[in-house]
Length: 213
Image (cartoon, rainbow, N blue to C red; front, top):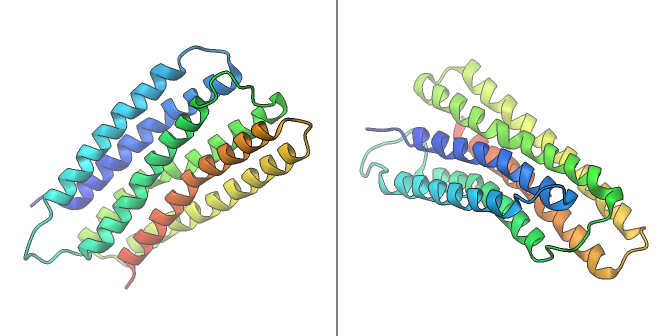
């Protein structure tokens, strides 16, 4: 019987692969220094479909009538949060695409790029967290559980840093002499980017529940 954690890690790896294209797409669209935004967005849509296929496979192949190390509903909740990381990446690009010719104030570019860097740090951790959790459920060694909990703690700290940068962006744009539509566009953009880290942290909370004694 194949462990559902194998599929969960495969799903996390797809999300990790998406993060590189996502970062390039955001920088491309905001800086206006390249013309690959639509192509990169298309790549992410394709990867999202691949992630959905993995998610369906996990749900469709869970053993029935067989004891698993975790409750299947906990697994479903975890998978939903992990999948929401990718959904948020797509939503960011959708939001940028609704005003393709609109200019985000140049004074905010570095802050937005920094926010993207920061929210992608916990995305990198997701795959490691699932990998270490797989080891824990194979051995049930306390030292392995500690490793998983430390990754979860890191996710929490990374989400807090993302919140701080998101707040900085909002404060800056509200104090700029720009039109209200641009203010709304930037504020909502920062919120959606920040939600990537939120979902990663939530996935960590779900994993903490799964490894709890």
